[in-house]
Length: 199
Image 1 (tube, rainbow, N blue to C red):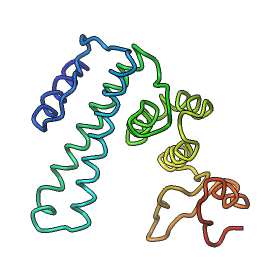
Image 2 (image 1 turned 60 degrees about the horizontal axis):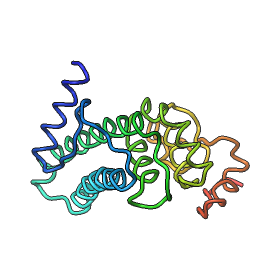
Image 3 (image 1 turned 180 degrees about the horizontal axis):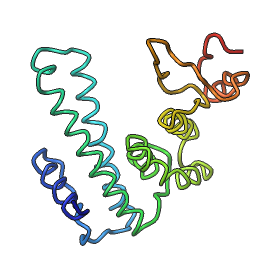
Image 4 (image 1 turned 120 degrees about the vertical axis):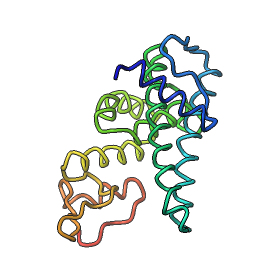
């Protein structure tokens, strides 16, 4: 299936859920700051709304949620995530990686979460740009550390900070971290509690 068909498929799916923004390659992208801010807010709100619905459902599960709503919600989450990624790709291609304050409703914050919730390949593609954004002070260093650990776990490597859930092998948590003698020191830089059992 080519990219155009994929874009059309997600656009139709999102229209059905009332989540509307242009995802077609021929649509023009405006790089006006106010226009981009609105686009990023819309993407970020959709990303978080579907996750909040999922958390709420898991917190108070009932028969209907477990039987059908949970699967439908997961499908919507995937559709929204992929549509957001297509949209981010198009914006970055036209306007560059977002610049601005590291706050909710602004480009760097929204772009980070779109990437953070994406596949490993997508994360790897954007890692250099997120790092540059962090070095400029536009993406929070703690968020960058979360992404680093998330990517390391996905690659089967030891975490740097222990910010992600520990992998479980044969019922045993694998608390593997890089340079374990200094992991709690690294965590302390972000105001995080030490991991028991490490110096």
